[in-house]
Image 1 (cartoon, rainbow, N blue to C red):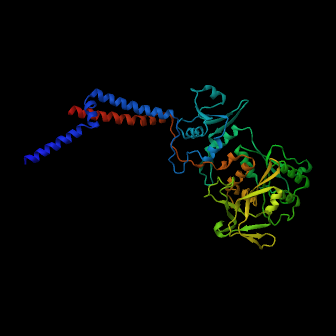
Image 2: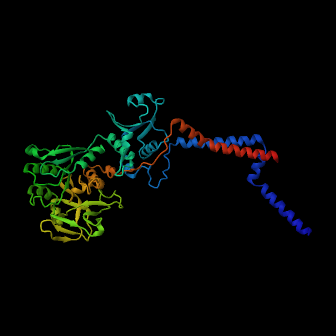
Image 3: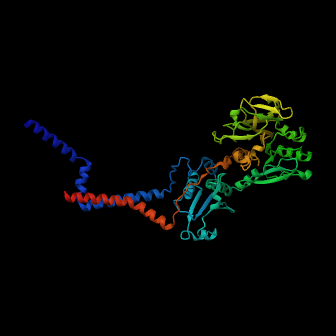
Length: 496
């Protein structure tokens, strides 16, 4: 019995020795038994807490986006568009808090390119800027300024510019799209001019397309009237000539001017609708197509049911290339809906080599599709057909003419599939605007129309006093917890 008690005493001593030799015991014995030292520890913890908060604020980090849709994260499209800008860009923000989602977005632009800087402006911190850009109380405003040696370019963005409405009248946030486009606009003096052939011979159903390009602020648009005949001219600054689908043949004088433009390295966007009412033979227009070794066939593609929209054979869900510059940036999960496309045929490889032409199909049908001749209503062929292609023609040493051809215009036009629905252009805007960027040599503009847009969530709007109260509560809670903990420890020590 005595041996058992002795062993028990030895175990207790070992246990107590172990407990008394740890860091927690040493810390408690040396620091927590004295009230002055305890208070000192509390003050040190508070100082560390405050210091960490100040340090994190000084880093000016963007907030972490925890939304599943990444609503507040700058897209790769914007990052790629602005990362190579070599001009200083100043963004002045009026009427927004430093920790607002808008300022957080601007931090991400700065991270993508250090030449893009922002400043939250108040009357107290920069009265000169307030006066210069006429900031007004209660009117939020963003001013984006591109600076060069000789001049400044300025874009003003109001709150109303940062949102639009979808078909269900939900508010859609377009902040990133507007800011990215404005940064690009003020950062360059090179605004491509996109010229549209316009006249009685031309299908004029591209008004949405034109207005959309102009609205981006990255291009100018101009109509070239075929009725001017011999006076018809293609401007020297024409970055791309759009030849819409024709109802009748072009005049010889207009055709000659277009061929001369191509032979100087001019770029062309070709659109074509298949229609029974169109002239079968258009030799002048065909002479332009012959330069690229191609032809728009007089047939219409019918697809198998799995590649049609709601089993409607006129609406085809097109396959597209993942490597071509125009479609490589398009999400593979998105559908490209084409209305009644025809087919594009190219000459044999030997003939193309003689013409110094190469091409790549980027829109095409499935291997189960059929080409129906619109004159005979019979099947011309079966298999995969080219609907969209990029074409490169060497016209002289070091000079190349680029073209993009689509065997459908309606798919990018004002035509709406159903009454009250959006024009088809809005469903395929990424394909057609990427084609313009490709032809205008503006690869940084790919998918610029499909930036991060989202339904605006319901936010709690606070006044300045409410915001101050919320900040105070959030900051005070950790300090109160620490103080209460220390009070509990001191009372325990006194009792002991």
